[in-house]
Amino acid sequence: MIGEIKDSLLNQIKTLHLTLNWVNVIEVLIIVAFIFLIYQKFIKGTQSEKLVKGIFILLFAWLFSEILIKFNLLILGVFLKTMVSVVMFGAVIIFQPEIRKFLGYLGQSNIFHSHLKKKNLKDVQKVNVIKELIESVKYLSKTRTGALMVLERDDDVNSYSDVGTQLDAILSTELLLTIFHPNTPLHDGAVVITGDLIRSAGVLLPLTEDPKLSWKYGTRHRAAIGMSEVSDSACLVVSEETGDVSIALDGTLKKYDDITVLKKDLEILLGYEDEDIIEENKTVFNFIKIKTKKQNNAAEKKNDKMSK
Image (cartoon, rainbow, N blue to C red; front, side, top):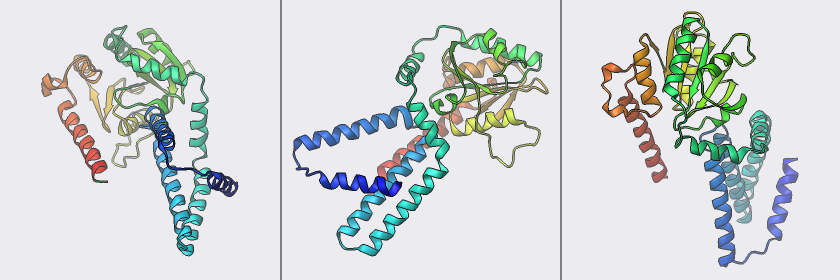
């Protein structure tokens, strides 16, 4: 099947008799701009990013093999083309769930509307998010009701939140307590919160694979740490066994014994206060250190791109 698609594509390319003029240049620029826009809006920062990069590498390898064959380097060209065909066939089988998920995501009728709505969330805060979260956590901790909330920050977690049940509901204590009530269908999964909206509930998060993590942490805490490892989101956890309240950030889980300190950290995490003016002894996390680490990582990525 892949061979037939490849042969068909080759035949179509061969039938094109392009002349290098300004119209062709504009067409190529439009295609490049469109691909770049799709990548920035719907692929960058998601689980599909590595898959898409791998596809582009295979396409370049396939084009290079055709160039080798044109220059009569038949052995190298045929060998490279065969390897590309084998890898493409294997990728279709290995990444079948990811491909199905990505195509299903593109088929959503409200895909563009949801992205535009998310863009406006940072400009409008309709409710006191900190107050609602604190009230919810206090009750959940007192009743020892397990809960896991993903507080989205800069990184997009759309690839995870789309797996759960879409809500797009205004954040409130009553709604959170209803979701995490033991007798409700969504209480086992995580809730994804963006701004003052609960985007989705019943979300399954990636578990951490840290071998040094203590055995006492259950699935809920491991999911919180795992999510904080793949994004800059803060994951708020309430233990079902002990009622302890913790936050996972940057792959680290820390417990809060004082609700006042929790409130202060949430204000920093959600952008209500600047971490640069907060004294370290009044917070559990060293936000200045985390911010510096993130800036250094961003600088390293930028330097790598420039060097390439």
